[in-house]
Image (cartoon, rainbow, N blue to C red):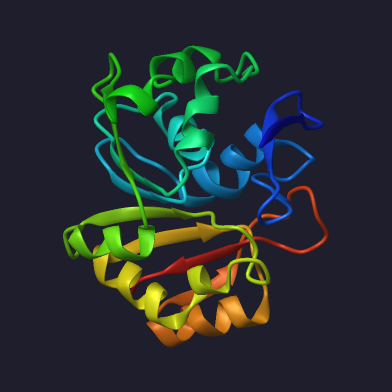
Length: 209
C-alpha cells in the first residue's frame, strides 16, 4: 500500500489487492466534502455511519464546523488506518485531522466540539449486524468499485444498512452503476443523482423515506 498525491494536494492510498485507489485522483479531500459531507447536509448531533472508513477523510470532514456528531467507522484493513499517522493533509482539514490521527491505537477519539469517532475493525459485513437499528441519520458508503468488491454492493447488505438508518436518513456513494442503483432501490431507498466531482458521471444519493 502506498500514498499517492491527488490534484487537490491531498493524498489517497493505492491498494494492490484491488488495484484501485481509495479516492478519486482529482482530489481526495475535495471528494470527501463534495460527494459526501456537503451533499448530505450534515448537521450538529447527527449519528453517522462511515462504511469503509479508509483514511477517514469523509468522517473527519464531517466534524469540521460541527459538534456533537457520533460517528461509527467500519474498516477491515488496519494498515490503511495506520497510514493516518503520517499522511499529509491540506490546510482546510489539517486541524481536524490531527485530532483523530491515532485511531489505529485508541479506536475511540473525541475532539473539543464533542464530535466522537469510534472505529470498528474487522469484517464490515459481519460488524454491521451489531449496530443499532433505526439509528443513523447519514451514511457515507465508500467501498472499492462494484467490479472489484461486488459483495459490498449487494441488495442483502444494502437492506441491512437501510435497517440501521432512521426514516429520512440519507446515504452517499460515488458510484452510479446501474447494478448499484437497482440494488439500492430494491433495498427500499429512493435514489437520485449526487454531485459530479472528478468524473463525468454523477455520484448517488439514496434516501430512506
